[in-house]
Image 1: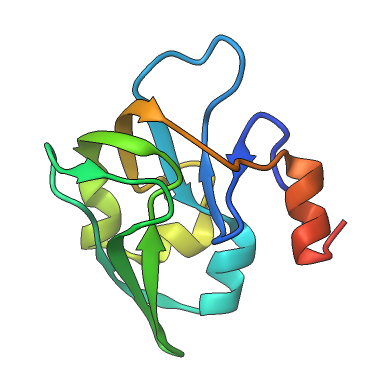
Image 2 (image 1 turned 120 degrees about the vertical axis):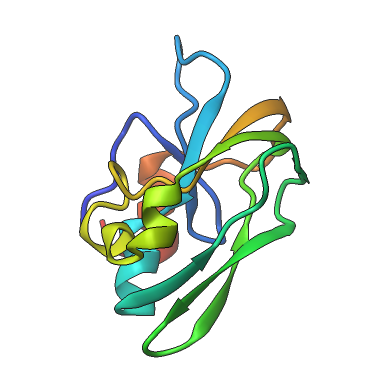
Length: 127
């Protein structure tokens, strides 16, 4: 399993596009590892536009044919956009978690404990 080098990750299996030169707002989603572990995602609940999200706090929910999983925010800030396409068709998250399956965009206030792709691979033991 590959993890894009241009993203940063959380221990809760979310990613954020926070790399040198990336402008606010930042895009967030779940990793391929998380999508594979969940199985076929059938329902996505995202935070509302304007909502304040906090690093490592629950901000939504993903339901699959296997289980229900909390969605955690990888950063603290204000949600400025959500991906309504994944609400309408949750399978997009499974098919393209780093592309069309992004979940929400945040105007970031702070972030902590983000992992590089290599550190996240170590955490998931998929290097």
